[in-house]
Amino acid sequence: MTSVSAAMGIAARNVRKSFSDHVALDNVSLAVQEGTILALLGPNGAGKTTMVRILSTLIPADSGSMRVAGHDVVTDPDGVRAVIGVTGQFSAVDNLLTGAENLQLMADLRHLGREAGRRRVAQLLEQFDLADAAHKLLSTYSGGMRRRLDLAMTLVDQPRVIFLDEPTTGLDPRSRRTMWQIIRDLAAAGVTILLTTQYLDEADQLADRIAVLDQGRIVAEGTPAELKSRISGGHVQLHFADPDELHSAAELLPAAGPDQDQLALRFPADGTVDSLRDLLNELHEARIVVERLSIHTPDLDDVFFGVTGSHVSA
Amino acid sequence: MTTLAYTLSDSRVMLRRNLKHQLRYPSMTVMLIGLPIVLLLLFVYVFGGQLGAGLGAQEGRGAYLDYVVPGLLLITTASVVQGTSIMVAMDMTGGIIDRFRTMAIARASVLTGHVLGSVIQTLAAMAILIGVAFGLGFHSSAGPLDWLAAIGILALFAFALIWLAVAFGLAAKSVETASNTPMVLLLLLFLSSGFVSTATMPTGLRQFAEYQPFSPVADTVRGLFSGAAIGDHAIAAVAWSIGIAVVSYLWAIRLYNRRRAAEPN
Image 1 (cartoon, rainbow over the protein chains, first blue to last red):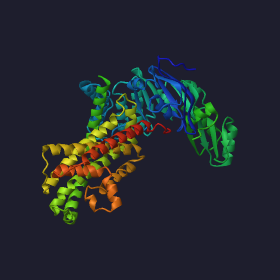
Image 2 (image 1 turned 30 degrees about the horizontal axis):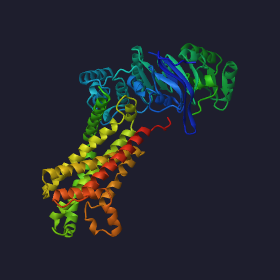
Image 3 (image 1 turned 30 degrees about the vertical axis):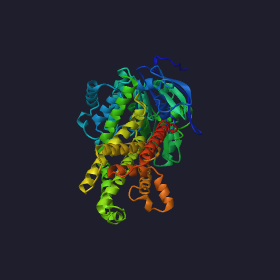
Image 4 (image 1 turned 45 degrees about the horizontal axis):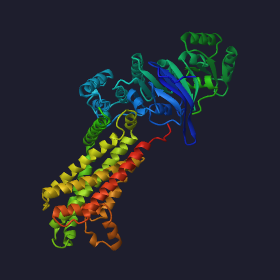
């Protein structure tokens, strides 16, 4: 059981929230130690965003106790607001202002003072690679630039706790990598981070701990390594041209599960080149013709299957 | 800094944001300010000949121009508040409002920024309209004090309607709705003494026209411009303004605090 204590960056116990007849969060407890990253992993509708909205004081919980950087979310929301930064799923930027003006707006609202504010704005523009576009209107920004600006706005006052709600959804792979590096740097600087994601690889890449949320409940929690050890793992899918080939292959590889309709064979594999080479050599020596193959790495669905025994319902 | 100082500082920051928006969204600003001028020309040059003939003591197009300017100043207000409603709804349906809500800033400063920005926009639009009216031959016997009083009454009434428009913008589920709701104000204005004397209307309509907020404001301003007796109109105008402002303010704050509280995911 997690304990609600001031030493924790985020500590939430037994949080419940319903929307009319729909239970969004059912006794959710979380603990994030200061300076670490917790990934809240789950499919759409699992309650990830609701959890972030409650912890960031946007909506009230029905019950439960929550502390963010030692401040009680219910009794001291302004105390919480003063130390957090939130970057939501939908870009929270002002489209009628320039990038620099957006940052300046944040600096002014955080009461940084004229000089300190200006310095911080310039520093963030530089750090987030937005200096060239600083004085352009946001209508000219790409998706990745908007997301970087969004995060930069969150960081104007150097918050101690940051909530990132699906920070890379909709980004191209390169922007995604950049965002990951920024998040890692923040954690290295001692910031506590709660991030939500639908992607196992993202949680795996970034998080110190992962909590898996399914239909409002935490169904698994642990380090990425602990969670992955509970996953059945990846597999290779072999496709054949006719049922005879499939039949021979199934006899050769008893560990595999044949699919007669698809003329395919699902063979457990860890995705390494060596294991793949062994498999292909074995098939080659037995003169079995494989039409094509696809490699399947573990994803969210595998995690769900591993911890709940059922596939993602959404 | 004290809480009050923070509130003032946050409101000033939000006002600056609002004024920047007006400059960055010039098509809307120009439309909101331009519409009353087009209507002024329409009323004076298209309708003015005929409408001016029924004015009584002084007749003609020129007399009608003098008569109708207060009505068009109110059109200006109704036009600008449509923009207020749209801007507020744009804010509320965008992502930035959630960012403001997770920051330790004076809660209502987002709204006060819109209100102060719109008051400034209304006064600027009215100044432009009066300038055009003078160019067309508008004549007024008002002294400096009368002008001050007229500006005061118009600003107070605009302040009230702007809070109402803020509430409209908050109540609207989409920006489109927010741009339509304030049309009610425009309709109400046409059913007042803004453009023709209520004495020419059929009984039921006349009673309605006399007891709705636009008429006493139009009559008061017209009296101040022309030197005619104002009577109880000024008191009624001020009372309506304060009443609308208070009710709208409370409604807006309530909507603002409640908004999104029940929204799933």
